[in-house]
Length: 206
Image (cartoon, rainbow, N blue to C red; front, top):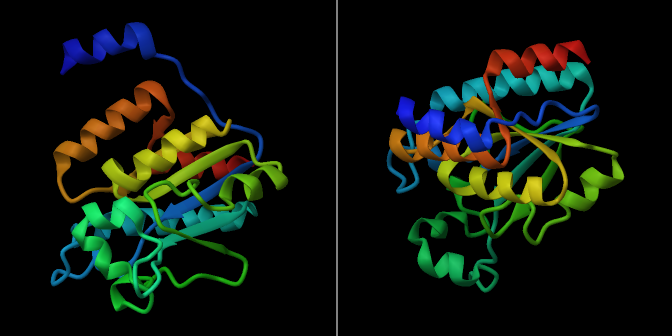
């Protein structure tokens, strides 16, 4: 791993830093990932706890907080190839209890909720336009799962021109290997991966 890190550092050792006007995005923290009876269960309770601390700091700093979820028409007509490929997405049909917010993440009146049908929080949604209209230059990502919707949202965030920050303890996956591999790759190419303590200190400095 040391040799790999050294190899990547030669080409990808650049830091993006923080922007001047951040927004926090909590991606797909929904009940299915926390219910052991659900195919989506990922054992990511600590990830949510971390994200809630970051959320608290974001509110204290007065920055926008945006929550995403996945919601499909009852017939799944809007699910496309993603729904055809990934069987657990059936839990996100409109009205499913597995698509509800987990305990501790009840949205506040000041938070924006964006529903999506595909992995990225940006694809087919108003997120990029909303952030741009607010003058946001830095997207802080937390949520689930690291190898899926976080990675997709990270790449799209960077592609839309936002400085992108991924909070290590506040993103999670159902297995350590894809989690670590995708954090490594996002850090190399698309975003800065920072600790919870680092992002909270930054938010407190604003």
